[in-house]
Image 1 (cartoon, rainbow, N blue to C red):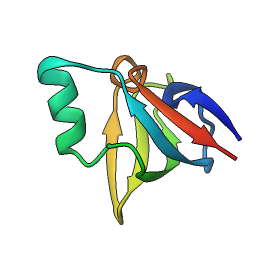
Image 2: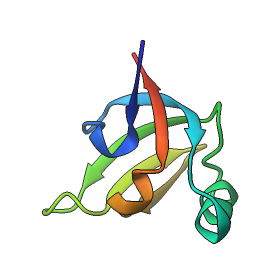
Image 3: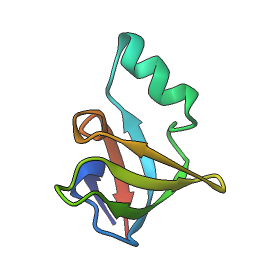
Length: 77
C-alpha cells in the first residue's frame, strides 16, 4: 500500500484517508464533511478540466476542488 495525494487518484480508485493536512477554517470544513483519517473514499469522476473531483464518502457524494484535495493524503491499494 502507498500513500498518495487525493488529487492524484484515478476514477473508480478507492482508498482510506490517512491524514488531513489543512488547518484553520479549511481544515475544519474538510473534517465536517466527514473526510477524517480512517474514512474510505472512492473517486467517482472529474469535471472536464479535472477540477473539481467527485468523491463517494459514507454513502454520499461530494465534490472537492483540487486545491482542497491537495491537503488530503490517502492510502491506496
